[in-house]
Length: 69
Image 1: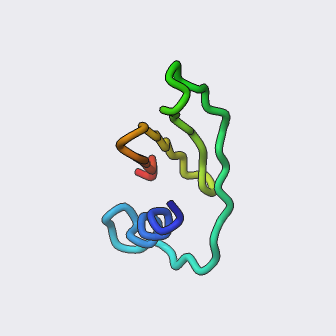
Image 2: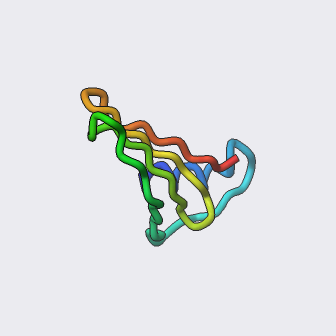
Image 3: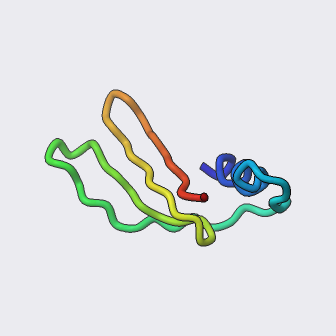
């Protein structure tokens, strides 16, 4: 997750520029409801103002989307 954050911010959303991230930033997760099967979950959160959605599906693993652009 943090690597994706650093890569996205340093890339500048595929434009020129961006910034050099040297320190790790805090990740904030918001409450996520438990699905009926008790395993699949979707978390929302933010990394220093950049929002993300992280979804876990049993048997498939994690899928994370940074809403940076």
